[in-house]
Image 1 (tube, one colour):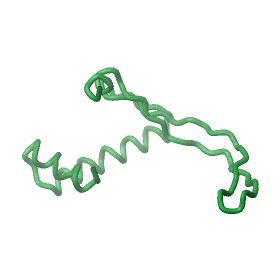
Image 2 (tube, helix red, strand yellow):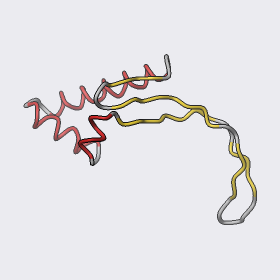
Image 3 (tube, one colour):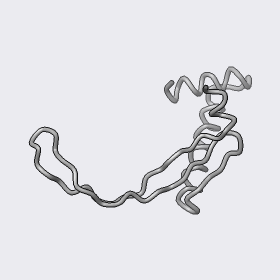
Length: 90
């Protein structure tokens, strides 16, 4: 599903315009981003937990040349599904 398709579904389910649904989705995405930058964790009970994890620097290989390269350390976003979401997906 693409962002546009998600906006269409949100608009149809709630009975609002696509512009309002797009604005709501954008606001949600901004709020999640700000909270992850600020505290590193966002819990949506019944849905899941977004968190920021640090990935260590490591060595990798260029698949075309086989040459060893250094991959720098960075922060990554992780998502762990909550029990209610995991049960619905099963």
